[in-house]
Image 1 (tube, rainbow, N blue to C red):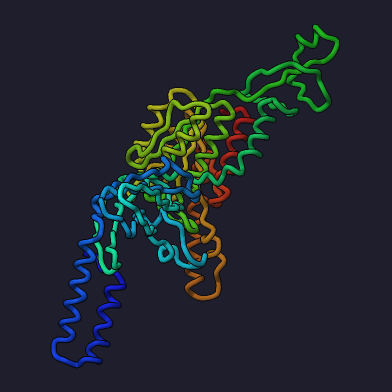
Image 2: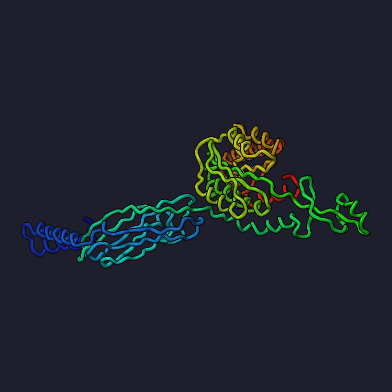
Length: 443
C-alpha cells in the first residue's frame, strides 16, 4: 500500500484533536480511523497490475539530439484508474531541468505522468529524452501507482517494459565536410586545378597554358595537332583506407570535458565520409587487446551509418594496448598497399611497449598516419610560474611535451606521418592530411 500527502495531513490533524479533547486513547482512536480510511481507499483503487503497458522508442538518435519514449497505457480493470506513472530511464538519457549552471546530475529527474483512465480506455504518455552519452541506453521498468477515490492511499506495481535507445556519435565535425569536399573536387578534376603524382591516374588531354608543368606535355598528341597538348591527371580511386581506433586505457584520459576517445570517433567519422566521397574503400577497426568493433564491406552511402553504429557502443577499456596483435589484425585485413590511420595517444610509454616497432612494420608496406589529441591544459601548466607548485607542474608538463616530441620524431624517421591537434581540430587536420596524401599520389 502506498500513502499520499493527504494521509499524512489527516494524521497530523490528530494532534489538533488531542489538544481539543485531551482524553486517554484519543490519539490511538484517531490513528485507527486514519489507518482504516487508508486501507479502504487502497482497496477501492484500481489494480496496477491490470494495466497493459507498451513502449514505443526510436531505434537510434544522435548524441545531444532529442528523442521521445511513448508509453501506451490500457486500463483492463473494471474500476477507473487514477494515479501516477513513472517511466524510468538512466540519468544520462534525461534532459536537465532548472538553470543551465545547475549540476547536471541534480537537474535530471525521472518523469512522472498523471493519468485518469476509465475502464477499457487507453492513453499515451510521452517522456522527453536528451542523451548525453554514446552507447545503448536500456529503459527501466514502469511503475504504476493507482489511488483510491479519497486520494489517501493506493496500490503500486513495477512492470518490466523493455526498450533500448542507441545513441550514435554526434558527428559535430560534419561542419568541416563541405570545405573538404570542395578541395576533393579540385583534386578529382571536376574543377580547374589538376595534379600530378606517382599515384595518379590519367584523366584527359587539353591545350597547354602558361604555368603548366612541361613534363606533362604529351609529345605524340602534340605532333598530331597544331597546338601543344598536356595530359591531366586525377588521384587514384578505389584505394583502401583502414581507420584503427585505439580503445585502450590511454583513450580514457579526459581532455577538457570528454575522454580522448570522443575526438578519435569524430576524426574517424569525418575521414570516412571524405574518403567515401573520394571513391576509396574505408574500413574500421576498434582495438585494444581484442576487436571491439569492425566495419568492412560497406560501400557508398552505407559507410557512414555503419561507422556511426559501430562506434556508438565503443567505450575506453582499462587495459594496455596489444600492438603486436594490432599489427596482425592489419596484416590479416590488408594484402595490398593502403592508408592505415592510427587514432591513438602519442604516449612515450606506449612507444616503448611496441608502438614504434609496429608503426615501422606497417610503414614498410602502407602509408601510415598517426593522429593524436593534444591537451590544452598542458600548455596552461607549462606557462604557470606563480608559485613553487606551479613551477614543478610546469617542469613536469615541459618534460612530457619533450618526450612526446621525441616519440613523434622517431615515428617520422620510420615513415609514419604524425598529426597532433586539439580535440576540435583533430578531425579537420586529419582530413587535410588525407587530401595532401591524395594530391601527392601517395595512396
